[in-house]
Length: 107
Picture 1 (cartoon, rainbow, N blue to C red):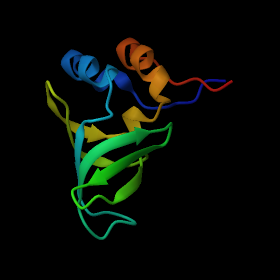
Picture 2 (picture 1 turned 60 degrees about the vertical axis):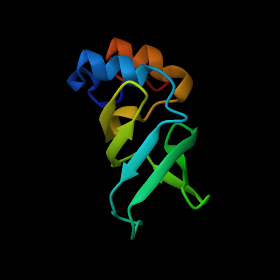
Picture 3 (picture 1 turned 30 degrees about the vertical axis):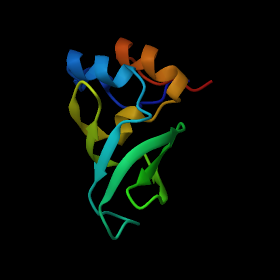
Picture 4 (picture 1 turned 90 degrees about the vertical axis):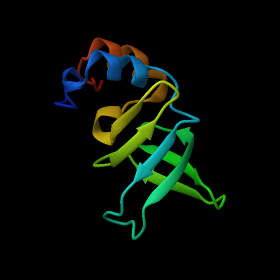
């Protein structure tokens, strides 16, 4: 059954190519929001379907839900706006889904 899912077609071709690669090791800056009293700045050290784990400069690990997440994502080639809803796919499936721009499917 198809779920509406995020519309990956709203990404530019440069954004798609950058996001189709590995995000672990990239830097993130996420402003304060629901459940976060402070800005989170650090390096992505793990990723799942619904979360990023970010290591901050102080060494703490912070788990951030991708749903509704906004901020900035720094990759070696680009600094991109972070839109967690568009990245809410399994890391191993992100390449084909982001490059194809298609919907997420649930079986």
